Length: 189
Image 1 (tube, rainbow, N blue to C red):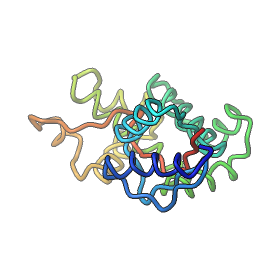
Image 2: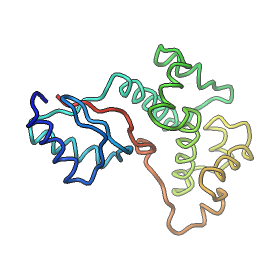
Image 3: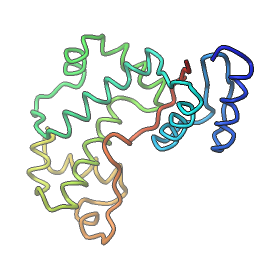
Image 4: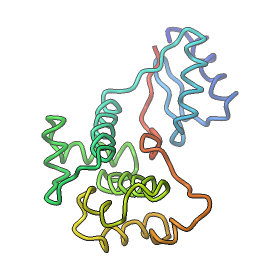
């Protein structure tokens, strides 16, 4: 964005879609609340129509790398019992885990560890929904020390035991790539 008219055009897009923002500056929008992936897609499409491109900050790109690495790991479902989250991400992304952890928590409002647990619980929900895996096998494939540990985390995250979840006629789930909404400062060009 290179002019005040551009700023107003972007403000109109956000207003039209009912998205509260803290500020719209040349090249930058800070949203009041996290945006769902659907809202990001809508905004991205409308901005592209106006000739703008949605850019993510460097920090947001780093967070996306963390998420993508963890989503891939959980999707593959082959996490060893001796798995170290800090070791995995540090090696996979060649970055200091403590720095990534602080950045992730600050931008996402959740720790990497809690995000990872949510991913694993969503994977278990998927397996339970399609009767693809027993709870024992899910526990083993996702690196849990025991079925009880998996069940306790599942119950804490969902409010239901795995067996109660499995009995539901409608099994609510979230796609692995839609677990948390971006809260980063998004840039426009």
